[in-house]
Length: 79
Image (cartoon, rainbow, N blue to C red):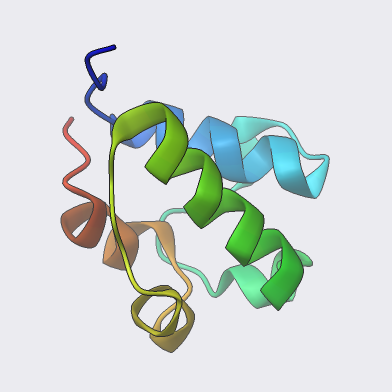
């Protein structure tokens, strides 16, 4: 199975889904911990991106700056 590239839109949708929010409610530049993101949810997201997109990223790198705009380059998210 070929991994599908992760887009910024999909990244935002994945985060919104795990937080029980609508994607447009998730800002690109704000700390996602303030929106309810915890370490368990963050690990679940990293596992899903590894499984669905073939992306290997360290939990610590994501936890260091939990914002979509910081994660996009780490995850190779486009557009």
